[in-house]
Length: 477
Image (spheres, rainbow, N blue to C red):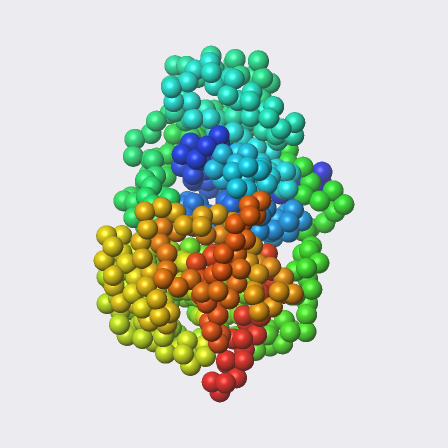
């Protein structure tokens, strides 16, 4: 989208790579820090259903990062969410997911970083892990440029490239392929981000993280063409050619219908309070989920079960998202009063959405990483236990069995744990595959299961939850 000066209203670029583990998150954080150090206002986005990478973006920018996922939302909604969260920013940096073309089921480029770049009309910079490569990097890059005619790849960054080799490689790539080389990243001691069973460790677990980011940013100021990256960002196409001079992108019709509905207007008058568990154990949160609830009239209050905080008394509803409760099983189990409070409020009728780690914490017992079982809230009369592999990994479409006419909601599963009772209120189906399975407990106003849900894929779902919260609020009075 261009403003009246002819400049793009949403300067942006997407950092992609050929595979996971190529340094995307580390380089993205270093670039975000460098842009912030220049005094620029940057927005950050993570493509795909990722929670941890945005946490690192947030540590660099000190502001919330967002997700863009073309499985969860259609192209129009994806552009709307980008514009909504990038408004007023000098530049937006999008971090890709997995390998650039890797999408649904491993057999499609749908929901890939490439798909997100197409949907948002964003120029792409390919990060090439050059370790062990020299001239072969030219062939590697050419392959990514030509695999799809509209690859959108406009630049390249060479990661782990020796400074002695870089000038020759830059010349060969630009002369033989015609794509801009926007710098290189040498090995920087202590700046890599460690991983574990669900991906990267959390930012709070890394000693002197801010200092590391500043050190990396200083290196990237010297080795990357940051001015070239910003110039590329300003070359981004209009987000919506039909609205060249508009200040923002309007909400798609499906979202407007919910936000403008009579039910939503009533909810805004009631100002329901939703308690959100947020700490080291419960931290896998889509910020846009909370923002949609706010737009529907909810007041969000955060509390920490792990640190002994009970559900706020003002709360009319409860959100228990996923995270790493298995890493804090003993400490969480010792919060007997907190767990009892959660159980009592749910049994009294408080609406509760619990997913993945939050679902596990509602069980009778939950195993830790060593397979030791610890007492939990006891809302779900079942045991959560550790497995040796990922279970039901990937995107799912969820249909409520009792209401097959209701719109589906999209979600994602990513866990090394399972339950002796996963529930059967919904049917989960994997896209492009024939696999399906029952899941999710629905009892009273409780909805609890392993899938992580994305509310913008079905705004009516968020509206229905808040209507239940409003009903509970009236019952309390």
